[in-house]
Image (cartoon, rainbow, N blue to C red; front, side, top):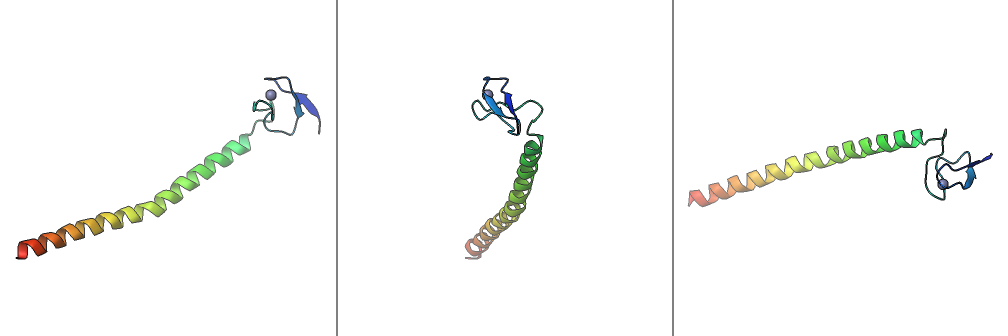
Length: 79
Ligand SMILES: [Zn+2]
């Protein structure tokens, strides 16, 4: 582990750090590409999971509302 100089603030930081702990600038040659990929994958997974979880609920809710309206219409018009 060696120390390198941050391009942004000049602080001595580890060359294994993906970003400067002082200013947060990404370390040259050690850009957190894997972190970006992981973040993008996680975001896609979370979005897909959320859509997968929410969509059926929306469908059920819409169906329930439509059914209630239809039932109410039947009950009120039947009298
Ligand atoms: Zn810095």
